[in-house]
Amino acid sequence: MEYRRFKDTIVARLDRGEEILAQVKEIALKEEIKLASVQALGAVNKFTVGVFKTDEKEYLANEFCGSFEIVSLTGTVNTMNDEFYCHLHMSAGNDKGEVFGGHLNQAVVSATCEMVITVIDGAVDRYYDEQIGLNLFRF
Image (cartoon, rainbow, N blue to C red; front, side):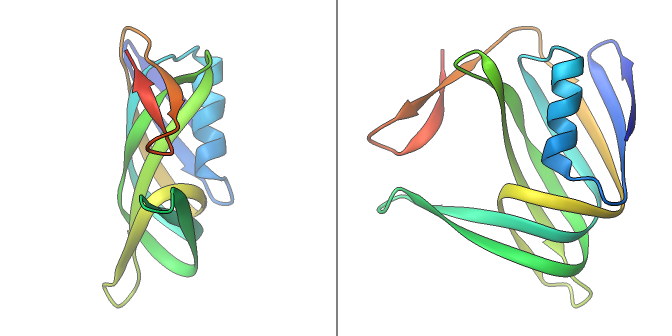
């Protein structure tokens, strides 16, 4: 991975074999980011995305392997209990034009991933909401 910071914007290139969430965490910790938005595109050969079932308060994870183009990768970087926290969603399409997506648990870059992180001046922490079963923004 290589990246460059331009004031409040970070432009990063993730390389083959790198795991996306791990690289976002590395950048956020190095740059001391407490709040940011993330967007990216690229190619992956293995990824796991989940869907939250609200009635059961649990995620169902789906793992995909093969050649996929990232159609959309978006989300936030912030904190929970003042520690790094990242919430990303990703959609990726295969060679038939089928697209799969959800909450990103893991994604391994197969060619490259071009990412833009927009740092927001401020901080928003999270807390676990028992009723909903998710980590929500605390303002």
